[in-house]
Length: 255
Image 1 (tube, rainbow, N blue to C red):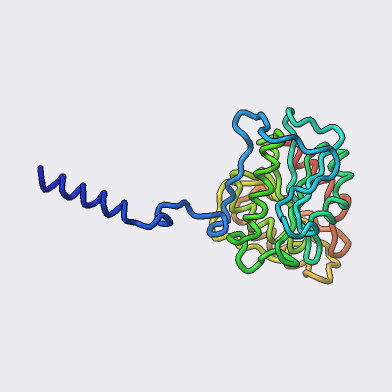
Image 2: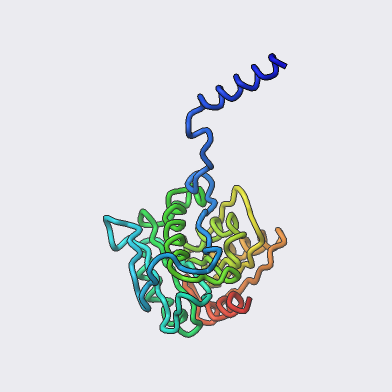
């Protein structure tokens, strides 16, 4: 009995001697697994964002690289509302995406969150395990704390590089995102997958930046992995087509 107790004591002392990092949970930057979640009781704990545009203050030193939130006129912080997180293309920022999509947010009545990459584009080499995912996680946490997001309707979308990043991050967080909307993606990289989000992929047959066959191959690979996927080709180039966006939003918001 004494020997067993001694072993237990030594084991406990050894555990105490371990550095703190040995007990820490893997970070968002290490895994790409987002930690932000809607509040359990549905009651916001922060002041509600104003209707229209607001900067979230995620980037304290450069307002042009901040996350932007757009709340439609019918927004009520105490009522569940769908949330679309949309990622910009290379050289753009969140404010640019909000200007493109604000009319859709108004007509379909959803919150639109547009984070901005830390550099001129998203970290495509390490996605989703990178600092850009930390930025997105911080922006989501702030939105979830100030509004009542509809847990069943939280989507992640993107254009071009943003679409590639959205596929990578969305497939790793399918237990948070109900849908992933991809417009003109070039690739995706998913070291781990959680959940089964619905996928919408759009690509222009005349795309001169990312070849149409690339988008088609991405769709075929993911359909082969048994995702609920809709592939919507169109006759234009490197763009978000109005008809394709409407189809994607109707599918997402239809539940």
